[in-house]
Length: 183
Image (cartoon, rainbow, N blue to C red; front, side, top):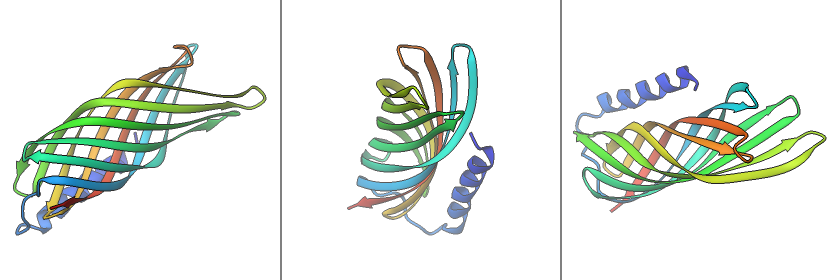
C-alpha cells in the first residue's frame, strides 16, 4: 500500500472537517459515489513472493436507513500486475454492512461483507485464463458530510486463492471517494 497516498487521503478528509464546523450531519437514504483507489497486491506462487500496487477506481451504491447503519455495494477496478511477461488484471464487486459512529459531520465506520473478485491472467507465450471467487472483506474509514455531499477515505482488505489454490494474494485497497445522498 502506498503510505503517502493513505496519509494524504486521511489528512485531506480531516482538513475538510475542520473547515466546515457549521455543516449539517449526514442525511440518511440512498447514496451514490465514486472514487480513486490504490491497491496493494501481495502475491505468492510456488514460494515466490511479489509485492506491487496499482491505481484504479471505485463506484459506490448504498442505503443508510439509520444514523449508525448502512448497506453498500461497490465495484472496484483494482488495476493489476504487469512484469516479466505476466499480466494480471483484477476487479471486485463487494457487498458490505457499515457500522457508523457519527461525531458531528464526521463519520467513523467499520465495514464487513463479501467480495466477488475476478482476475484475468495472461502469460506471454503461454496464453490467457481467468479465475474468480467469493471472499470475506473488511475495512474501516472516515467520512465528512456537508448535507447530501460527502467525502471519505477508507481502507479495505481481502485475500484470494486462485488458479487451483496455486496463487495466494492479499489485497489491500486505500480509496478517496465522493458521495451524494438522495433525500
